[in-house]
Amino acid sequence: MGSRFVFWVLGVYIATLLLLGSVGALIARVMVKEPPELYRNPAFDYALAPGWSCQTDGTEDVCYPAGTKPHSAIGVIAIKPRNDKDNLATYEAHLRTPQRIGDRDATVGPMSEVRYVKRRMLAGREWVEALHVGSEIADFHTYYLATTTSHIGMLVTLSVRKDFEARFTAEFRGMMDTLRTYQR
Image (cartoon, rainbow, N blue to C red; front, side, top):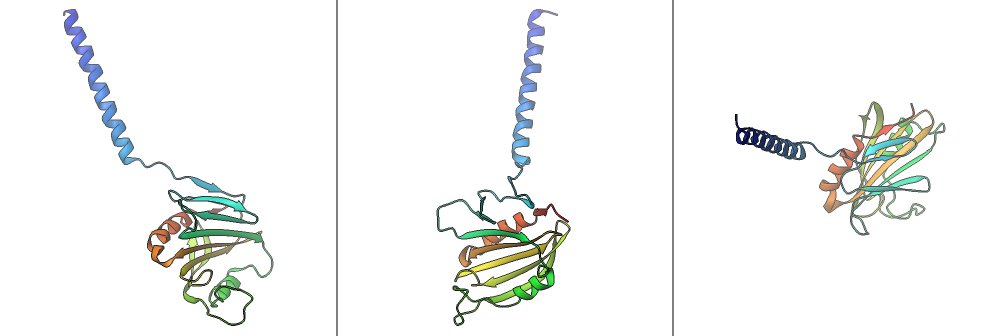
């Protein structure tokens, strides 16, 4: 065997490796999704939908999609130390009650429309889920999730402008489906 033959065999071998490596990298880029960004708090974590970000604001964690204010959706997660009134039955009863739209201290004015209240399981924990129309902001639909652990009461809300509901509700459900609490 001549040196030209060895050179061509090595050249074809290297070219084949480069081609197969490039095809493999391309397939991996197309087939394997980047893992979602996790938002963590001392009591919980969940995977953020693409473009969403959260920040702590006092005792609440406020989440919103990318873009400028005013946002078409906003999520708020509130946590408080648990007391004897923090249980699923109390949360469910409260969420079955229409809320006054706007000023919470007003005794007159429109009330929210309760679309549904039900229980659901998320990551092995039972939650109360509800949908109100106009409970937080007029022309917004607000989804509520509430649960307790041994030490805290937790309320998650997502208020979304009704003309953006399909998009943001799907993103919100995807995030909440990954919600894990750290306490029992």
